[in-house]
Image (cartoon, rainbow over all chains, first blue to last red; front, side, top):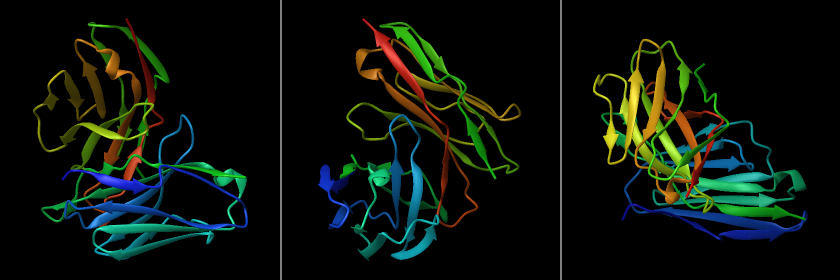
Length: 115
Length: 116
C-alpha cells in the first residue's frame, strides 16, 4: 500500500462551522504533514508530526488544530474559518531512512471552500 | 535558508518531443535531497524523480531524467517522448537531511502544456 488517503475530497463550510479533515497512511511512515495550497502556487507547510508528536507549527492560526491520534492517522480540525482559508489542503507522509526523512508522499487533497 | 527557483512559469511541448524544465537552488549544505513533483489537474502531487546530492550519477525514471549540476546548484528535469498525460504543474523541491522533520522547500512551479 503506497497511498495516502484523504477525506473528504471536497468540503464546503460556513464561517461558524466546525469540521475535520482526515488523512490516513499505512506505509509505516513516522512523519506526517499538512500543507495548504492556493491555485497555481506551491504547497505551504502548516504542520509536521514526527513520531506522533507535533514538531513544526508554521505559525498557523489557532482556528486550525492538528491532531495525530496514532502513527497512521492525521486530522486537521477546522473552526471559525475565514473565506481566505479556502484552498486545497494536502496531507503527506515520509519515512525515515538512515535517520533522515526522505521524500514525501502526498494524498489527493481536500478542496475546502469557506462561505 | 534554502531557496528554490523555477524560472519558467509556463512551458509547452509538442507530443513526442523532448522538453527540459529548469530549477536552481541555493544552499550552504553539502548533502541534501532534490525532487521533482508533478501535479496534474487531479490535484495529487506525484513524485517524479529524486536525486541525492552525494550521488554524482543523474537519476532517471523511464522517460524522465535529471541533469544535476551540484557546483552550479542546478537540477533540471528532462521529459522525453512527451505524452498528453505529462501535462501538469511541475514543482522542484529541496529537502535538507539536517532537520528532524524533513521540511521541504518548493519552487513556484512550471505549468507544462503538451500539444497534440
